[in-house]
Image 1 (cartoon, rainbow, N blue to C red):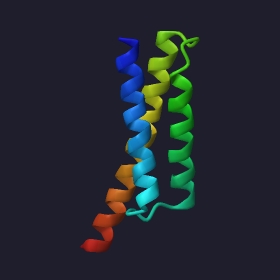
Image 2 (cartoon, rainbow, N blue to C red):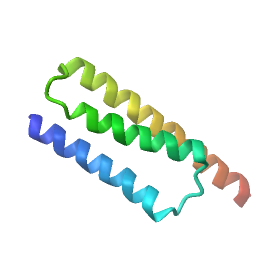
Image 3 (tube, rainbow, N blue to C red):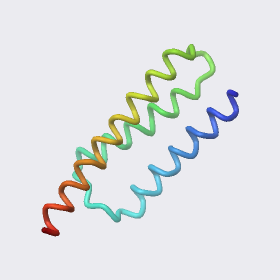
Image 4 (tube, rainbow, N blue to C red):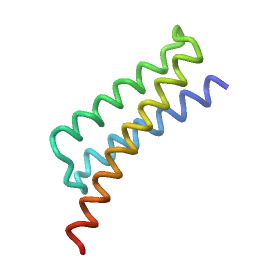
Length: 82
């Protein structure tokens, strides 16, 4: 189970890094910093010393942050395309 968790976190980390590196979205500096913070926090959750409950709460918090960023980007995109 732990290996799957680490792999999932690694995939999410890589996906965020890919989005940032391709720079396809016009993220603000604040949004880029939030995504970079998400990467750091996801990497911290892979620490086996953390208990499972704390790790799950961290991941949920990170996913909520990512959702907020992409929702804002989508709203912004929709605003300029209407």
